[in-house]
Length: 219
Image (tube, rainbow, N blue to C red):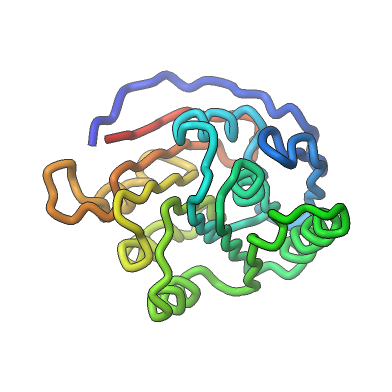
């Protein structure tokens, strides 16, 4: 996996704390509530735009797993852009209730895509095991866990069991070192295991949701 050297860059969020919006697709400009949950760091609009440029814009037919949904911004963005199935996993009940309220509002507006989003109030590791046992497979996996708790290392061993062929993986972390378990767990470009074909990541500074250090990997 190539790892280009990049200087830290500042990417300002276009929404103040407590307010967020979907930036593209069928639900563009839909507001998203952000509850005051400790450690919750919604991905800023411009960072999400960068992610979807990497993915190619539209995600028609993709199956998406967001293991640390938080505000739901990343997963709902995928649904808005055509994903056929989105599974949102969030263990905090306040954060999950905010996501559920957004989904209820979208359903009330008659959006058929809202039915394609499943919200699970659960922890990431047992959810991975349950999805693998049900033979569920995903084209895109999103990982934006609480910083400083080693979550990426905990979930990395189970990702291959739910990855569809040529799946993509995107993660956010507090440092390049924290992303290392994902790089190590993903097969190289010459590997016969073609489960994860590309890995992307971004590092954000602790305590500053508007400061982003871009570190992206792709193969």
